[in-house]
Image (cartoon, rainbow, N blue to C red; front, side, top):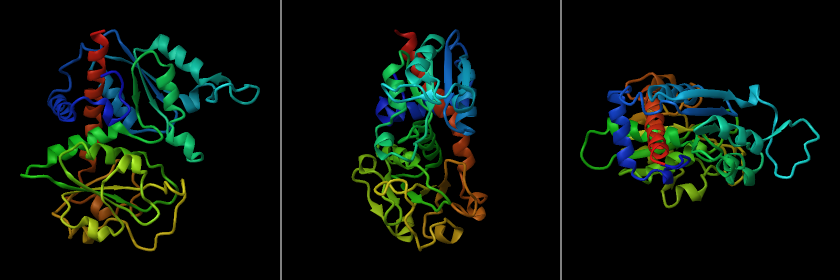
Length: 319
């Protein structure tokens, strides 16, 4: 694996899921693989699970870990090509990346959507510069449009919990929120589910359809009750409007998931990437109930990261 920013970077999804599950059984099985190598974790945005799981995964492989909270601890970065830097920005992103090239064997970056310019976000204005200027493999720790390490952890979690014959029905359902949230998790989950052997549908209110470049031919249902019928897994996530970018069109129906709504499912397992606004996105009764596998999902973030880092190291070590 040369880089990891989307499901398209994975040669065989089932094989990397299998690898992650083997790692979960013995996380310290490859402690020498990263010896003498350094991974730089660059955070332009807040993080809990991504930061900690990535650090644990890297340490399990014997990697040296450099963590940079770039938004707080680095110089103010300039991202525009040809900028005349006579204002508040001190260092251009291409110079910062070139320095990271000298220090790191792998660069992993977290760079959320700005939620101001649809064009900038769709074109991955920040991640694309890392891909352009980095001379070492680049890993996305969430970008403007995708969250691939989360999606791999989701695939691992579904695989662990599906013990029946046939395909499970997986529903990605929109949930309420108090502010505009980016589409990255929803986009990414939609892409990865299309590579899994599942029946997949998306439920969201009118005005909240995701970008068709990610959902493609996936059925989108604007009635949550209808979508939840016979579901085996329900993934809860908020996102703002894509068409009316970053807007929050009024929703009159109550889309918060409750135990009453789960009665229409096949005792579905409930998933969420966290953090979650309790009793806004998800009721306490669901979050803390027997159907929730949310914390299992969170733990699997370690093994999704470790599987990817291991694959990246394989590519480095064979060059």
